[in-house]
Image 1: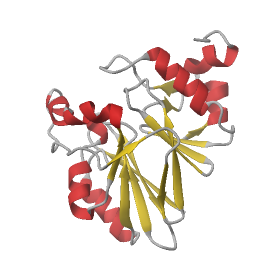
Image 2: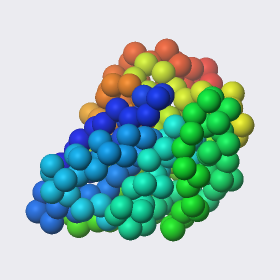
Image 3: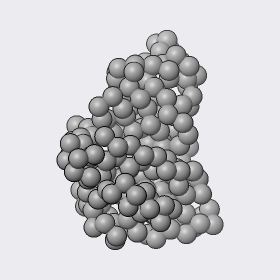
Length: 215
């Protein structure tokens, strides 16, 4: 398996390229910006994009989505609950003085338990609302892409439209902390970590670990 990470866009989003070493097929996760850099990486690794998957639809995670879809003609996957957020992506970016092309709606809806399969690659969808209404994580073999749900030492913010702290904590408790401790966490921003490290060190998860937060 090929796994590459690019730091893209003005807000420093982690865009991931997951590739099948034999067939040279690829999944791009969260193309937040810097489309030319993504294309350069794909060409250097001789990869053909067969799917584009977003963990959620905040503007900083979809900045290169339109260009990537045009160039690759790959289908785009997103949870339906984030469709309204996607529809406001360009307007949301403009509030920060930024411009992105307005993405078109998703080709396929993601639902909890779905499998996105490309060649030998398979990602299981974990529905993890809280940061947004339609946030998802993507579980592979020994790794999970958590978008803005869980970070090294932190959790996703819930003070934006569609955010819900209680939903986020339930998502982390029920969908992520149940994974093996060795599972590598690849978040939407910042460094990679593991489920075990976050159980031990993440102060925002302490109420879950100690049982003080049970709702």
